[in-house]
Figure 1 (tube, rainbow, N blue to C red):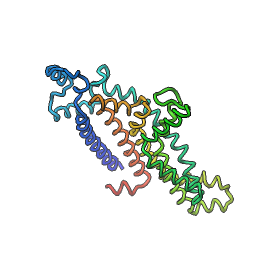
Figure 2: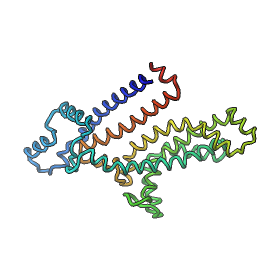
Figure 3: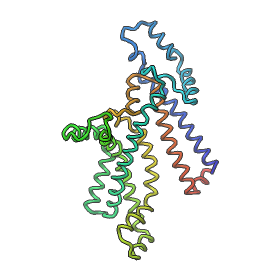
Length: 308
């Protein structure tokens, strides 16, 4: 088991190393900070002084080596756009807002996906099941930015039920949380429906019905409990996707989280902040997948022995 965990941990570090190279290259491909931080008529000496101040006068291999050494120590440097703050300091300042939005989106996803998925399986091939399938299809096909704009237009502009954006109390969470969790609702609902259909045909469920146990108890206790394993596995991945996929949603709703921070950093060519945000999101995603691999190995010995 220890060998399995060490191998998976090595793969995780290897992926994180590859991410650091990719984000370093793509951040610099977005443009030069000089274009946004210095006036249009800046002299050559001013540009050279700016590059020297931020270490941009060095070659790319030298810049990457410095970035990697400091990043291992948790130091992503000083922000270029927000010069009075460190890059990671800016990220940690906004991260609680992203965590709040992601947590609420997960709650919304579960509250919608579980009952709809269960009832779609129970009422298989009925109009309700057909509506559930259409709902799942639309959920996985609808772009988040379009859904967010439509929700703003309908519920914020036309009905004036919620704010159009920003962070102004609980009501500000509703529309971005629905937008962020919409895809996850569809995915969880589909896999829960499939798992419920398989469980309903098992012998222990038939035996429970023969014993005279009420149907609602058979469905919501016996069937759902045993059908929850595949959705829980997917849920771990989807939770990481919600955390790391908030960039579009936060941009549409002007939610002051790390996603919006990343967009502002890209616009300002703020390399340190861009790198800090992407590395943090990557660590979250990689650690969630690593945790799922380890849980799988504990539950099914064939997995860990197969890698030995």
